[in-house]
Length: 114
Length: 114
Image 1: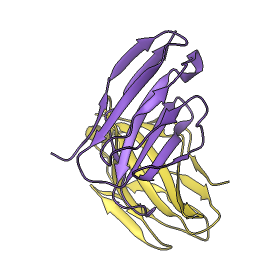
Image 2: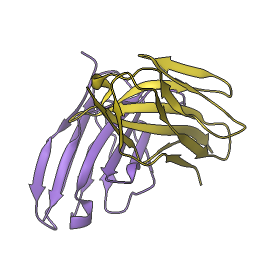
Image 3: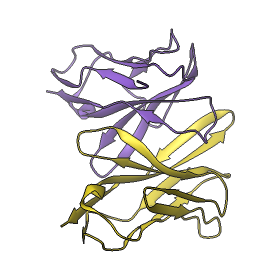
């Protein structure tokens, strides 16, 4: 089954404790991205990658890191989480690098930073 | 910069009512436009899209027409069902200097009562 998987689905942590949210897709997609969803703000793009070893900042990259060592994986790293990073996070992937293509979303990771 | 504005929610309708959710955008070039739907506890799914002016996207009884002159992409459905209850996101995608830019609206929560 074609899908985007994220782990963990739920995470409660404390300020300053490094964490990684994994994202994997099995559709051989070139483009992958991370979003955060906050009430009243919709989805905002954190980082995106147009292919292996190619990553770039989205609209809200501060406090986050990403890497794209393999085509299928695109982990999101919070080196020192803070309470303002409490949010619902979505990973997405799409074929090619054209803006016309459908984004396939993972199920989301709900993160709480105390 | 690019932006997407959706009508304020939440929207509550009775079954079989006519639905319109307004969406307007600002962009520097000629973006592709999308409607995504998010059912409770799930990630976003593509509902429909349009890639150029005057294109009409349609799916599951929903329609939206790309209106360049009014920079709009309003979502409509003639007769809604309880199963249409979800959050709807309007989005645009544009390539700027070789990078794919994705921008979402804030989302509109729709509730359909039987």
